[in-house]
Figure (tube, rainbow, N blue to C red):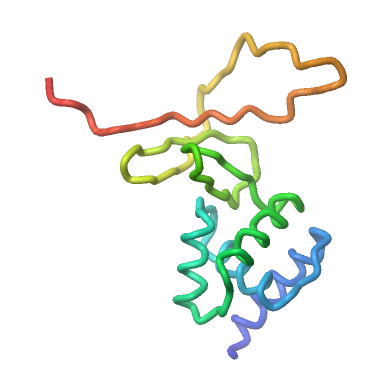
Length: 143
């Protein structure tokens, strides 16, 4: 293992530990795949495919469990786009998304003039934690 790879693994290990999770081999391997390429939007199935291709022996159930643990620990943000289609976003800041229908592709909306008005009052004892906007796109239809 080269020194650069070792440094990255130490950084991922530290990030997992600081999130309050035990840095198991599988969590570290999955976190490394998730965070090594910058901000990403991945489904559990896509991460599972990447893990298998990278030689990480992990089941799809373990990938789902790890993703939900990372989300609860604040390392990921969950995006429900289609009924049963869920994406995990490595960018946990407040931001919004474009979703291309038919391609199942999601990407960040560059920060800009997105505003939400007339939000309902939350029930007593509750507060609004976040508002997610997903703008659905499709190719223009011929006129």
